[in-house]
Image (cartoon, rainbow, N blue to C red; front, side, top):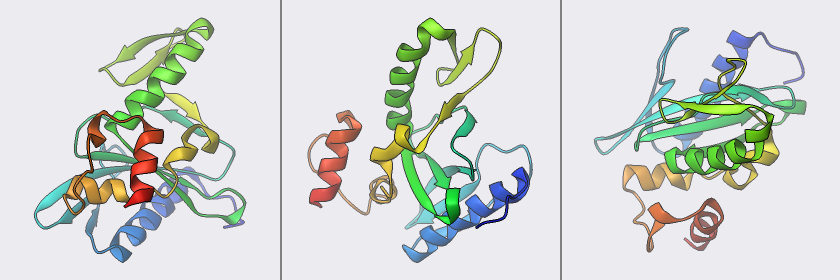
Length: 174
């Protein structure tokens, strides 16, 4: 993708890219349409429904990332920078871990509040984080998280209590 897309077109491209990957992995998907929505894609397999939020970018960073809340919800970042198509998959616990890292690190710079328990808000009222691929690199192509949520793969040990690096090691072992 060499041409710069409008925000609306970029959002749709991200949603369709994620839907395509999920379909290829054997999931049923339903893309929601509209401008103001909390869920971009519903994923279903064997009666289990997972909500997916998609954030796409062509530049260096994703802006205004407000996070996710909910056990059966995933946040998938799509990176279209320089014509590539990379995916980073986070669940609610991954977001909380990332939020703690950014919130603590940036506290001196003005991050003062967590709205609804998962949305960082700065003193100037800006909501969300600005994230780069480096911030979420350990979540790259972690499609197994969807399998875990759908019940296709049984967790080995205590997946829910693991930090992202521990989870990554466990996924690679499967």
